Image (cartoon, rainbow, N blue to C red; front, side):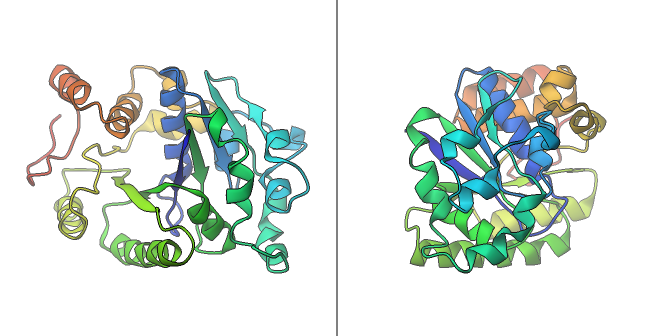
Length: 277
């Protein structure tokens, strides 16, 4: 049975869509069957896989409102083993429409249960808000990846999200867990970045990914070409960082150690040391 992972943070610009696109692409390249659910009205994950929104006939909006079955909204991307339920601008009005539906927080869960067995991983790209669509995603998923920036303002947002996760866990989804907190656009040369990481690790021991995603030009450029970074530039630091994240998600500690030793890869040590270059 597939594992459903929501990628959530109510703050925008922290790399949610980038994480979904690149982590899904890596797992697909490893022969895992992956489905991405774009539940952000901006549709960045949809664009990141090269799907033209004007050609989309069915979207996450249609799935949430029950107009179609989830299977009828799935599009196979050009990338190995990766499919997507795309988002269009119609999703922007979905929050208001869902108010009138019964079981409005369970609608995505009920749809995904009908296809969960078909995939190894299902990633949900959440919108930058703690509204009904994000609640639907948290109710539907098994765990949450929280991308965040290593900035002090981000700590406040993390606290709000964790509180929401607790409420959903207590009321709707008792098995919900934090898969991991992922630092993105990370610059380990900055003292403030390392201080924020240490603070988060203090309050969430064992929940912070050792892999940190560095700022990388190739990662930023890839969406404009409609490609995950590994298909845009296989040799880039961005590609390597998402490969490391994939290893970590899969629990492949030996592969992580070997890759870091071979590449001298950028990573923050949990003991509080500086990153390796």
